[in-house]
Image 1 (cartoon, helix red, strand yellow):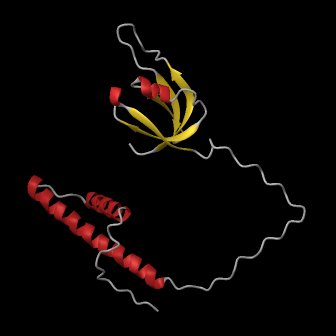
Image 2 (cartoon, helix red, strand yellow):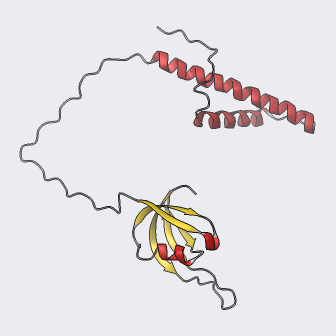
Length: 178
């Protein structure tokens, strides 16, 4: 599991669903991404990890399951760390200075190349989508709707763009640059 920030809302608690012949593990109440979550402590080491941490925020990595489960603290949140003392106001504040002037830069060439690479990615994902549509029709005797094709193509393009797959594609569309 990747690192995740948690805040301990309530320390280890006994499960109210436990029965003498079917005991349930203890649990800890956590805040994860603004939502209250209940983490079942699968083993004693995981349960001990949260002891004495009520109200603390930190980043953890949880791995394994059941008796092999482990929790590792990989950092504390800024909210948990001590805040520096507040700055005292100065008696003679200096007025804010204007930011230094910068020369206007023409980014048209860079923007054109960015767009050209995305267009090359769009061509690639469109070819893949159309190949999939032909394969689907051959296998099932049905034609995919335009909405379905658009959805497939968009999904492929967005995933490829987020993964940085289009930045090095050969560019076939040239933009006139002034």
